[in-house]
Length: 227
Image (tube, rainbow, N blue to C red; front, side, top):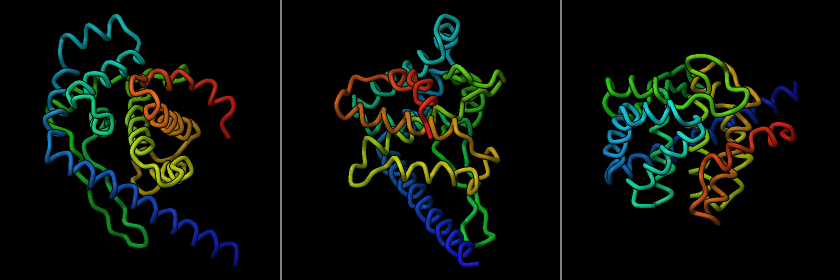
């Protein structure tokens, strides 16, 4: 009985932290909307749907495509790395809204995410990189959702320095599916992806020219040592 109470308290505490994460990234997104986030998203949606990008897909790996997306966003954001990482998160999201289940209640509502034109978005999702890891699922969807997770964690790792994000983000990942119920369950590969994003954000503080693929290529090494 005592153990169950302790576990319930811990779970409630983690959900509160999760809501803090969500509110933080949503507020920051709204701030950037006042600048040019929506314009950047629309521009990138059109680019990912373009014949040029389709040609790049034929001749380059999906890891290289992730770099291409990042570098183009970085150019549009005038080399502001924080804004680039946040914009890249929303640009690579394979959906336009999240169903939020409020902890401790039965309330559910959708949070609309910055995503651009719905028609263009649907086509963009089909073109997003999906084979970013050696063990990416050989399916139509593959690991498309992992790219946004990666950039989201990189954004917080790069932008927030007043506490250790790695443990906080692990909590976020474990609760992501439970609260949003997007995929149904969490797995080790999600945790590894977020950890790689965390490492990328840290790297960017020292080397602003680092590329996403520099971190994503470490997947196998991290997977062998990840606990």
